[in-house]
Structure formats: C-alpha cells, structure tokens
Image (cartoon, one colour):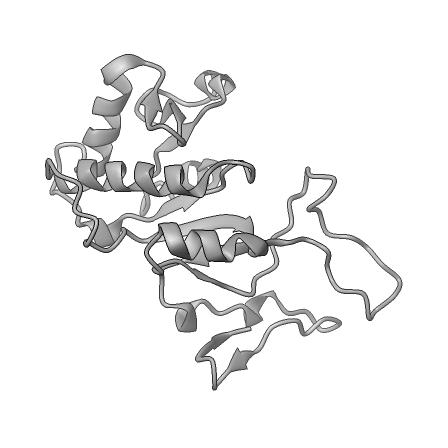
Length: 195
C-alpha cells in the first residue's frame, strides 16, 4: 500500500483495509479503513464502507471492471479461511454493485499469503480457484518467517509461507528472483508455470 501511494500513484491506486487502528495516523480516510477481514466489519460505521464502495467503483470516474482490481491478502495465519472467502464474496458484491452473493461467479483477482500446508482448505473454500505458487515468502520483521542466512548450501529456506492466486501462474515469472549464486526458480514446461 505504501509503495503504491509513494511510487506508483500515477498509474495505480490502493485502498488499505486493516484492523490496526495505528494506520489512522498515516493514511487518510480515502486510503484506509479499519476493518476486520474475518467478519466483514468496518469500525467506522457505514462511512468507511461507503469510501471503499466509492474507491471500488472508480471514485466517480469510469467504473472499473472486477478484473482491473487486485485484492492482496496477508491475513493472520490462525484465522478461518472460510470466513476470508465469505468476506471476499461480500467485497465482490460491493465491486459489482449486485445485491446477491452469486457463489458460482469467479472470485476477483486475488493474491493471498498463507502457509502451504493450508492448501487443501484454501482450495476448498475458494472453490479451487486459488492455486499455490512456489514462491517462498519471507518477512523482514518476523522471527519465524524471515530469511535464514546459512553457511550450509544444501539447507533450504524454512519459511512455510507461499503465495496463493487465481492469476495465470504461467505469467508469474519467478526467475527474476534468481541471483548468480542462487538459481532457485525455473520454468517447468510440464507444469506450465514457474517452480
């Protein structure tokens, strides 16, 4: 969110939904709303939801299509995935302006960070639309999921966090993350994606 606002605001727009009220100090109400993603609850009554609705519908400009919007989720890993899926369906209703929750409709474009061992539950509650990528996610400020510096070259990264998405995985080029010393990613012709 910060990167989009500071470096890409001429081409992209971003709206942050987060439960942490400290973001009120840094972002205006047109950029942030305090929100609980597990029960679709806005802490600022309907005002915050109206601002999200305005953002998703182009803020008075031409209405963007659902495919022009990317939802990025980095939820607490102990949260219930079925509740997340239900919240995304509610956001989809806001995006499309429909009044009913059509569960047969595809989810909007999503990128979600979650441990790989939850793949079964993610596919189950997101109707098999979200697929795992092989990208190993590290967090700079997390003791368990940050990149380990090891002298043993055979030791793999220990982070269990991966990216789940309904975007075309064959177009997510992970080889750009390779370095001269570490060639971690390659394109697999059989899988038709980067592994």
